[in-house]
Image (cartoon, rainbow, N blue to C red; front, side, top):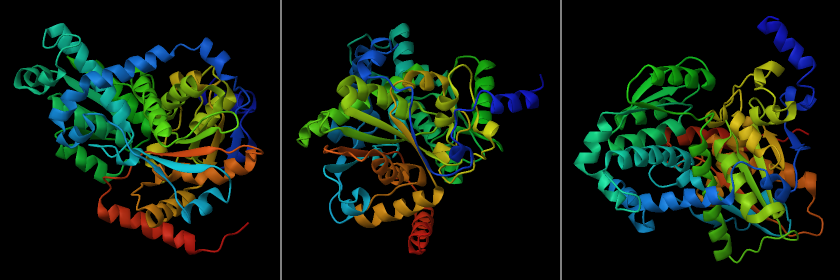
Length: 442
């Protein structure tokens, strides 16, 4: 069967689970029919709580090194984490529409060094690779002082090796920053929708940027090919990386600590509802795994995707037998949320969260700009469109479930924006204000 005929066949047979409104590019709340209770799903899961704890322990081992490489992390002891900020009135009433419970922002858009959530995954994978190389070379010993990896002998050792990654922007920047800080050569393949300023900042840190006209999938494929033909080269595989996934999962422990510090109890009567922007899936998938291990069915994990690029929704709705692209149902993948502009979800992540994610909400680009402007006016948050996605999903999802008799705690996880150039951010704000000034059409 030709590829075109195969695509037609799959649309008519294997993708029937995708709701018509999703295929039409309309905002949708999709409740995951395959979700199991957390105990049952996690009992057979390939990653246990011990894997999440091991990732957190590795972060701890590298804290002294991160302090040496990035002095701005010294105040937090080399820990890569963001603040948990409560949304106060009157903004809360606008976002939460008078519901009981509390509303927070997990501000990964302002993570130290990179200003984006990809530091959790990109940094973690590069550090894991560096640890393995350094132990084998005798530069460090397990449990020793990892801070020595900032010294000249280690930098000279890493300079003979390279890292390659495909990205829409933020993952590439995170890999570039930590890779170059350690001394690695870094090559980043950037998709056609990647912003020019993201490419420029990569070049400034010494990374080689390879630009592509086409989408994220093509950039990743090109990066994979490049890594295969180069010696001493390591490919950071955003689509299939266990290390990226577990680096993100450790963030659940950070949130648990912060919620306890805020006096938040998580239970069936007081559920935790977390809104997670989703591109290829690594960050929201890893965080979901960690949260489900910690809170079980008392946490509801909601992925949020653009209407033009709902790759995880399409994959989960169509089944896990083979990778499914949004192009197969006629969607364009054209969205201002460049960090979420992914045509096909990670199959590793899709299979990992298929029974764990509670729902997926798709949102229109206009809402991303509107909420970016609103959150700047109300809380001085500096968000790129991708990072505002979670806010656009709060009301549609909350209206769909109702929370009858319950007092939820909602957390909107932001993903990037703190390092936006002023001219880029002003453009986002101006567009958001213009959208907010338009009368709403039902």
